Length: 189
Length: 421
Image (cartoon, rainbow over all chains, first blue to last red):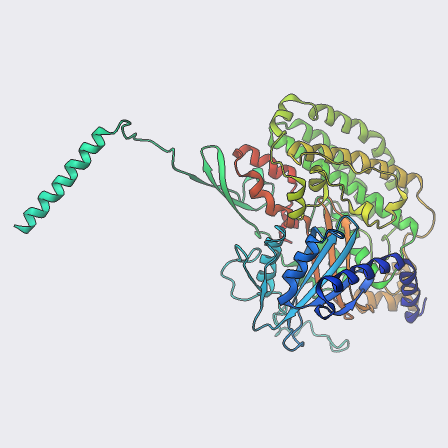
């Protein structure tokens, strides 16, 4: 039986070798992002598992996505998906939206994140750029209560209309907190 | 006095109105519905929708003027449930998304976790996965195309191919023990090697199926009645399809050759020789043809994978993530420890975020997993192709007749489980 610490190191090495062309591509995209929108627009740039991931602000997200969509070189014509996320411990950046764009011409994926306070979850819509964003944003509103300004029909999509909370937020645990038959003292859960 | 004056005034107005009516060229018809729209509820439990979702249509006679889709009738909060489950317990959730091709969902999820953990799966397991995924794709497309026949009034083709799907399910049964919600494979490989019976069933099926498929195509593809019924129905342009986030056969029918298997090969798809069929107009007939062509390509892949099936282990040597054989658990201390840790979800996952997508029956099926190092995902988002492309349905059917709308829905292959997750 192998040692637990050995499990990740060969995989990490292999990933580093295999990702060289991807790294070069990501560097090109990052260069483009900096050229179009300035160096200050992006923070927290990293490449988890080969996908370039940048964080920006909600004030700039619409311009950035529009700019990437109209860019003649890379042509980010495809909005793969978007989803909300909730980090209750991050002060004033509790809620987030994660957008994934795909340039089908060059086969490059890009992930853009924005974070904003939970007390003011207002984000510009992308429905004017991508029709696909319509239901994705309704889903994010349904699950996390993110308000998309300019959305044509921002109502709940999967849950019932008269639900008065946003169930994917972390303050709603899946199971009843008062249950005791499932606590496991030996595993710290 | 004033009351009488008012009455007289009213009387005058009434007389004038009556005279005006009399002067009109076209007399008022008793049953004139020309300006009236009918509201029609298509669904939620309409037999022609093949799943529970509703469309409230405004009909002008037989034509659809507008539609409001309502979804979520079988929403089961998979993304929320997944935040409480260890990785291996999430596989049964993925079964229940596109239940016409569960093995693809299972494998896609396993590959996502393997990518996160950095586990490399041996070649044999990858080929085995390819075989199962392509079988699933064939059943998925078979159902979609034969149901399209049923919705247009041709039941026979459906019965022919349903029998073949049954045989594929018998192969699933031999490989993993279940038929519809398969829960097939494990993180790190397959749960067991192909048994001789499974291989025999697979080889037999590969011999008999092409003839049935040819018969099905002879019955439908050039059938005058069927073709007249579905050509130019529910068409969508390539630009629009892309903007709406279409993927899979529906996008390829519109003429864009985006296939995850080719663009971002996973599980050794780069080893196989196959083509991406594309359509031109993106209408129902194109979608039908693309799916049929893909069935033939999938058969090609299965044959290649089976002929070149490498020898070797069917799972990765990753004891922290892959369950040991049950016999060893009783005799071997390490096996017992690993068994216990995996079952209790005590595996060590790295912190990170990973997106992995596979070519599902309906398109790009993506898994976006954010791990905080705990036993469960911090966030798991499923990119469900149905959910994204079903938005375009209303736009595709406005101006068409109701019966065409049914065919469009059927040919888009909207699976309620995947739509609502």
